[in-house]
Image 1: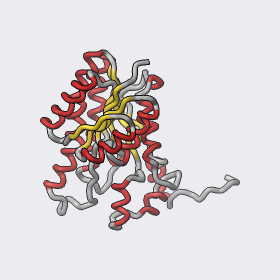
Image 2: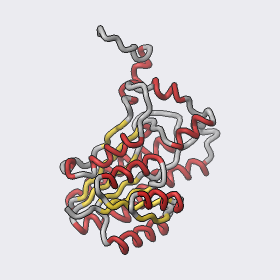
Image 3: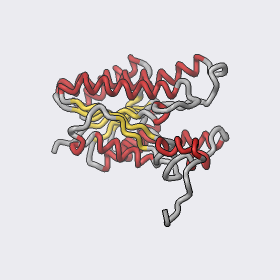
Image 4: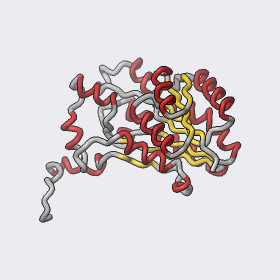
Length: 259
């Protein structure tokens, strides 16, 4: 088989880095796109890949990065949109439009721009796979009035593009992580914005998701094993979505071997 060219945005850290490492372990050539070029080069260097600087929210930056990638490699077979930013849990009266726009610019606009930059090339070659990283925050209510809607938009966008490019052989899917043990989440614990034990007990499995568990789902959806799967949103959340409704009944029951 010809070695696939896999582009991963936001691959300098967190879920994006885990995805880059997952594809490299599968024998793919990984291209790291990140606004932190030094960190991107570190990851790419460890994977015998290449790194390019990009601001995913800027159309000219994305167009230039895509042009460079296609000039160097000639094609892209897989695109993973993992670049994203988190948001403080502020009420609308305290959430400035500057912060609202910044989150939406990266998380939704950035996903669209990179899809629009690489998707047509995949369609022209008659094959390709795109996996966009959304969030369970885009599937349920929460105090994230920009991040949640932006991630819901990513899920909807992926469905639209799956239909748009499906006839040309391009598959588009979404992975929605739950609370994942990344450096960004660690900063939330350090500043006491988030409480680790509260997040863990909100899941059926009573733990956080590991970045490589997200990567495993992404690698699968981009693989030939998922050749008939397009337009789906796959939550990888340690059971957060199924556990939270139990709060109305007093919470999850403790495990009992006799039950």
